Image (cartoon, rainbow, N blue to C red):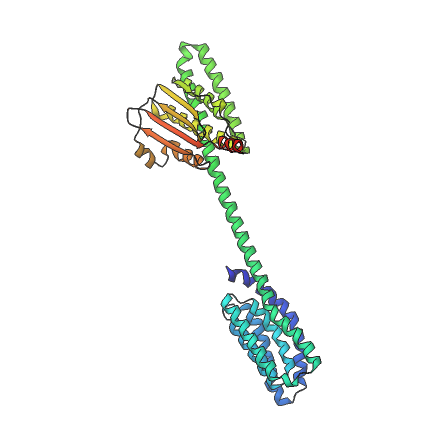
Length: 381
């Protein structure tokens, strides 16, 4: 990750650095003042120094080696000619800040400081007061430059990681939203289409025997289809909030269309849970009732709503054919149980399934009664 973040940064700096190479005119001018034999030694070293400087921005794996070679050339020029060649160290200092690992960075800094001590210690007797005024601030800047460059690279790296993390979060949010829409479409439209199917079958049976009632059933189908269209629009717009009491009313209609008797215990309208909890319980209740109609072959269904200080419980039971719990749990579809569990997990709820072949099925939905707990806490205060 660091390498990917630092390489573009390094490539950009190399072009910028090439502009600053015009300041190599100073050591070149100094070299021109030397005797010709000295020039034959000095100029190839200056050319090699420039080549190493440019290559260090391109070749990341050998960057530390280039730094060491550049500082070696600087030290040699300082000892062979004069201390003013030390300012060429400014070209190597930024590259230390671009070294890809912390170990290499501190190795480069250690080499720089050792060369400082070695070169300056050997030339102390040549320094005047004006030389110190110029050399000390410049040396301090040369030492600080790698830290500044490294902080810039680290900042770019962290920004790249943050950008990558934000992209991953956005991707996960999209996946979760798709799953939510898939569950909502399954729960909402599955319920509505089941109702339309039952009513259309009933209308078909009544069309010859009781035409007037068949016409009423067809009208109910039209109303249900319009309601389905509205539900789809609400799902798309994210406004598909339902309450537990409303879902019990829907359950009455679909069970009546399936010729199943419904008994309700408890008053769902008195449940004071938050809209989120109401919505999740309502959608889970819808799925449970749809399962009763589709799979149970029951003649009766009961819904029990209970609330105490700790939790809200909704129980759906039927007197149908029952099922093998282990087989349903292992099934990929699981009669919609997977979606119900995922919904309940969002609010720390739980789902319990009890059934035996020939003895009906009972589904229990339980969620923490957060509203009641908050009220109790307020009373204690």
